Length: 92
Image (cartoon, rainbow, N blue to C red; front, top):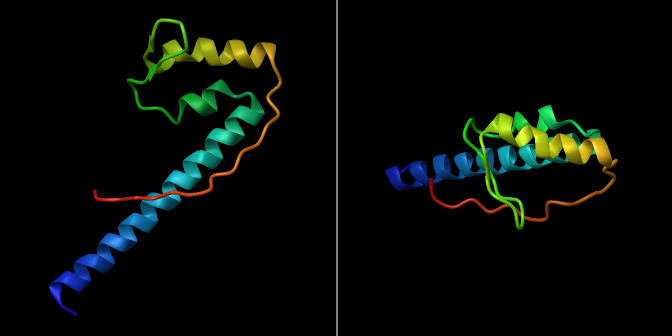
């Protein structure tokens, strides 16, 4: 195998891993919403997320965004669905 082909195969494998990871994240997000589990959603964030609610100031930090999620879950039972139709990965 030439160097270019080997690199292409490695790149495609990495893209498949990335695509699978994105699909898994979407499944975990959906499960957290349906369960009304703010902790499960927060676990999917980095340590320094920024939540930008419409017509409200930004909420910065993982623990700071717990309250808005929990408020939704305390008031509403989430029952919805969605489907991830396509994931495309390009580059690094």
